Image (cartoon, rainbow, N blue to C red; front, side, top):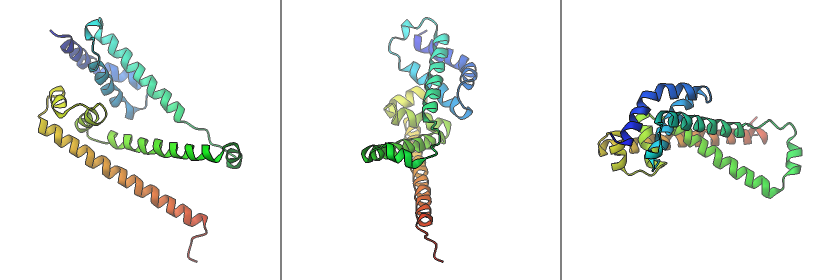
Length: 190
């Protein structure tokens, strides 16, 4: 039996316990993503022969991924700033522009991640393997035991749904900004 087969069998046997382990660290909506990411990471390892205990290696990988997620989530938490004038005074115009651009980029990426999370599970797996990891349709089909035409349909569906989600978010943000601008300018037509 090949090492790939042993690792796959160990993954299937440990999937529920990996989920329980991860559930202690991350929010419920992140558990499945981290469990899937654990398997993807393990599949990408080149020297699988050096893994003496696949089960323990998976647990450690899942735990590290969950802790990485938690660290990123903690970094994103920002305390509210009471005095915006003090902040403006501390930052030069260049830094404000740079921070604004970074916030926009992070916000868009966050919305895109949410769009991907909302895809059906099989569609999400295919979409992530194609768009994030750059697998070919043939590689995805072989890895997930799907036909290439099914993989193509999942990629297409993922693109359509993500695009629609992003358009909806952009429209919503633009409407909120427009309404806010009108209110700040005393923009009611009274």
